Structures are given as C-alpha cells and as structure tokens.
Length: 244
Image 1 (cartoon, one colour):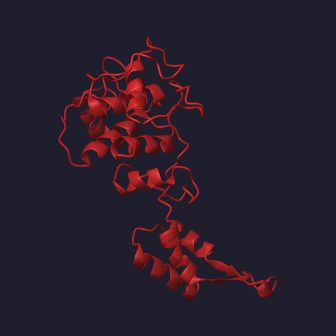
Image 2 (cartoon, one colour):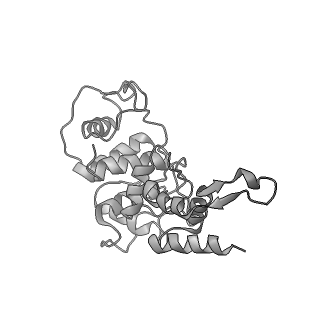
Image 3 (cartoon, one colour):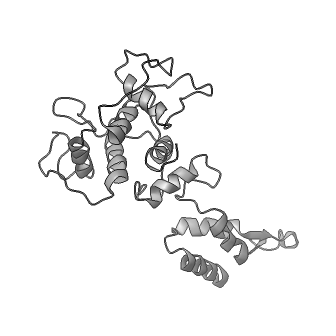
C-alpha cells in the first residue's frame, strides 16, 4: 500500500500531465528519491521522496513510452510520432523500438501521417490476406488506393512480413512524390546499383534528406536489412515533420 506522500506526489504528477501511465509516474517518483545515508540499514528504504525533483522531471524529460529512456537515441522522433497519433505503441505501454516493422504497421504509420485516423476507404478488400475485421484493414486499403503499395503478390499483401530498408524507401517516396519523379542516375550507395529494383526510391530518399545510409561513411544503404520501429520513427519524422 502506498504511503500518503507517495500517493500525494503521484496525484500531483497526474494533475500536471493526466496522460502519464502508472509506470511513468512510478519511475518519476523513484528517480526523485534523495538518499539519506543516516538511514541506511535502519529502515527498509533509506531515502526521502523529493516532490520538487519529481515535478522537475516533467520538464526535463517525459519518456513517451515505458521502454524509451530519456537517453534513448531516437526519443525525440518517437515522441513526435506519438504526439501526432502516428503510433499508439503496444497495449502494455511499450514501443518496442528494436522490433522490426511489419508491412501492416508500415501501412498504419504512413496513412496516419498523411490523414490521421479519419479518411475514406473501400470496404471491399483488395487483398485476400487482409480481411475487413483485421486491425490494419483500413490502412492497407488506403495505402493501396493511394498507389503506395501493390501488395506482395497478385492478391496478397503479406501484412505480417517484415519491411526491408529497400521496401521502406519505396513506401515513403511513393507517399511523398508518387511514382513519377527525377533522381540522380549515379548511385549514392555502393550496395544499391542502378539495376536494383529499389534504385530510384533509394536515390530519391537520399535526395530528400530522409536517409544518410547505414554506415558512418554514408557509402552503404543496407537495402535488405530490416527497419526497426525506432529507425522508422526517425524516417517518418524526416519525411513528414519537415526536418530533413
């Protein structure tokens, strides 16, 4: 059972930011504890909750998800896509940044970035493996209607398949400029030659400032590598947030 001071600080935090999860409040309270050496070994918890420090944590750092710490490399981009409703994370309050993005998640990200949640779409399925009762149905339908996807076969979308960096380039570029666009015919990346199926998309992605490659030198793109959810947050921010 929580002590009165814990309950009071938690209520204060929630009054300031009602959207805080239980875990976020708990972590902020734990991080606000001032250690008292004179109590070490005498009581169960040798510290004192500092309400001022807990409130200060609201302005210094407010993790968007329970598994995204304040020092996480992509925290700002992940916070951005959450605040704009592009992602809701998982039901347990996590974002799972290192998990590879699936094709249906990609559909949801891009369609939400373009339209939010309110948009029209055909109620008759375009793909045999994405039925009307599937959570991603409306996003996949709209993605197809916008010409951003052609599916993974004649009648399939492969919603649970992981997205590669090459596929991600095609999805994002089609969402931004369609299929007809100019691009440099000279490869920017050694591993995406001009005869690669995704060449024009990768070239355009680079020209739009959305990718810098996958190595420090910027000479490789790693087209067959999977795209993590954290990486996708960065790509979405650069594509739709105006930060290129």
